[in-house]
Length: 350
Image (cartoon, rainbow, N blue to C red; front, side, top):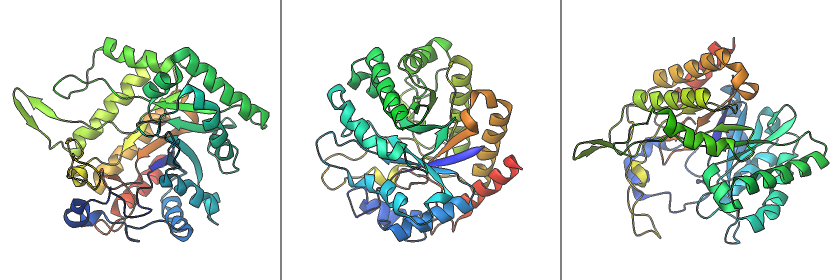
């Protein structure tokens, strides 16, 4: 298994994501190097931590400037490229094409201009020689580009540009999530999955994955609750992985969930009148749980290697500390979670 991690750069400065609740009630989530991580030296440290644990690549969250302003969270990938030890890991972009980063049809060529330096970099993650790019929302990609057929045309134009630069093509991976009923449970009906799968298969993707499959609520009659054991959260990801494998003709990059607990953001942020929507949280995650999740995924990949491009898998996430999806070493765990990932990778790859 070749494991990478999503990297979200919300820690370059004290922006609204640094909520009072995060800094007062969840101090254990602070990275061992401190909350601020906006230097090349700090990136070099993070690369060493990740590479020493056996991670092969970072997928950097990257935002198209929909409103004309470059998002400073895009600077993380540039700090990586400036790092002296960048060659210890590969990288790709996770294009966060959601609100604020939508890419419309008339801006596609401009977006491709921005993608090209990353796709053609010597450390770009590749599948069969084709540099990888991931899109956060396949549905929004199709909607903003004008439909599935237009999306295929756009992706083929990107492939043509990469081919002109001397590569065999570009390997496009799109995210999709499982269908759920009104109680929050994942729907196991093949018909419900086909709607999502048809969308993924229709627009010219090379493979599919996800960002995370967290649960918004647990509804039992009129009662709604939110505590959701990590074991069940993991099982939701296994269910989703297996359903995609069964119903989808495209290869899959399996998703490992590092955790979900968004309570630090369920408060009023500066510049926002409403808190982040409530969602289920899994406060019982342990290093052993994470070890077992990574190991199980690795064994599944070995048994289904023909369905997984280059045995790639990805974990949500390296540093989504505000959302509770992180494996980087923190003051609370002193690297125990990351060490569990390392041990699992050693065991599955031996």
